[in-house]
Length: 454
Image (cartoon, one colour):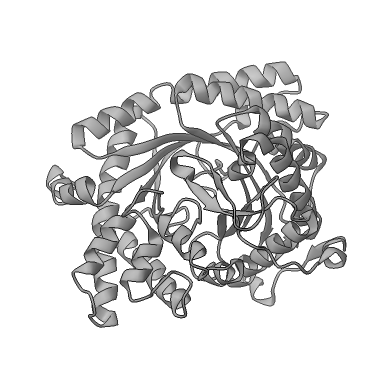
């Protein structure tokens, strides 16, 4: 049983340390909407989303009021649209029309974001997959709430380098189409390796084909809570450090478990998973980088950073799995640059580089996230960065992702403002040497030898 007494324990965490339920995300299957007529398909999609999520925001606000727990975002994820639109869409413009329908549905039910404008192409692209990917710049420039993701690799299948090459071009085009808004379209676009089916966090959420018709996934976050707990054991040994993180993660996850069960009951939708992720915000005191500094680093990016992040990520997971039987999604520490004031400070101090961030992604829960790069960065260079990150995920049997933002018209030393949870970011330098000949090769990088486990 989870009672109100467990929530009362965390009152100070909520009031002073930025503990929150970052999102309630309702996953909705659109497989029963498939139709060969585009207009009929669009109407079915709208009706299914509206009927399923009409009360999502209302129930989230009621739970927040009843229990005193901030629930920051209410979101929707849907079946990857490349699968849903294949019969009806004969052009990239047709797919973009579905994006408009998704945007309208999201606005009408009042959610913050809708994810699932996605394609899963880790071993190859169907005609529908390619059309959807080619439509992404138009879709993200013409919508406000739609988020897109493309899974281009997995440990089991290898990396589809044709898709990697295409995604470098798509990211450039998306940046150009939203140039007047700081290339913000790219902030809603993620490239994955080993993408999970049940991730509640944007921009990478989609409703996997292995999921039920509807499901509720909860994302909980509390970097400020962990930092405060570590302040109480400042200078102690590593065992004490680990136990403190683990116990704190346990308490945070219990809050998410309560919200998940209550939301499931009130909405009549099955509970899926809790994603316990230390997802920072631009708010002071809500930073993963600050946790690393509390462990003893001058800045995130200093020698020892990767080890400290590995410790943090592992203990968060260990605490979470003891608190809930259904921990899933990404669950761990996120290291987005623009959304974490401590990360921004590290970049500004010259301590944190793109290459160091790449090393950190070997042990964290996501990848190169919300990183602003010069607007004149070549598409082939972007593809090369994606390929490197996908290789880390493939070989290490973990989820990795890339959310790069080439900010058109800006260069190193300047910054770009996104606002809200997306924050702001300094433009980071990119290695100037090319990889065009490598990226222009066709085909796949095969799966690693340890993928053959049957």
